[in-house]
Length: 360
Image 1: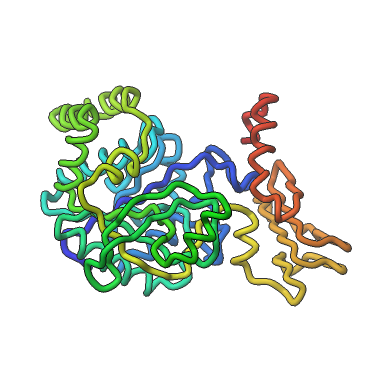
Image 2 (image 1 turned 30 degrees about the horizontal axis):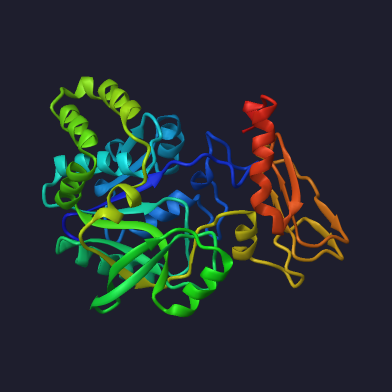
């Protein structure tokens, strides 16, 4: 355990990329779609328990997801859950959590982690987190840059500058998602790393940054803190309605005088689509990832998931097909080529357009 360390796990999400398994009321962090048997957010919290105990772990999620999230993390105390009344991107949420942590411990160091990612090497992950916490304790807001394994156009990048210590470098700049040619340049440069979306800071340092760059958010949070407990829920809802919708990267990180990045590699995946779920899944000799009772005849490279809740036996058979995702739930069936896995959002958009809100 690291003294005075708090963890804030960001657990929002709209539930579009893993439809039909994910919905507004069941986004991907509440699903067991990775190699682990438990849902992604449970795996995330267990992964950091050696560094940060449950009583110092906060889960920031939407009010509409509180019950489901509490059930998924039923070993955490009720005080661990922060119900965000309105989604306003990461800056207001992280500021709100920072004020909550400071009320508990003025000496706190905070690590902010996503709730829905996969880590193949937990020990290397915890070493990277410990290095980032050590750097942040010195007063420098720190992030983790992941060594790129391919020219990825779907991620933001961090350009690293001068070395500050072993595996720790100064952040030269944040870079938006590049096109293919620029991503190839980043991969070859040795200076560009995937932006992990993880942040580490002393709570008082982040408080000062919010006061400087988001003064209206800081003033509202100060006002809420002065209220009696019984009045805070309503006041928080009013405050969030007025907050700007802005990312922590844009609101604070890109404006900071100094930032550090810990360069790391620990088998990270953002689990961004059914394609990624297939890549991480256990497969047979024909590269199919399917239930044991599936019948696969001259089929190769398919992902089959039976996610129905009734427990009734059903045989899913694939004949002469390659590279498909076949996902079945209680009320929907999705079939699409793996290479078009990102297009599942178009299904959600079509359902929304025709008023089928109960399906999304």
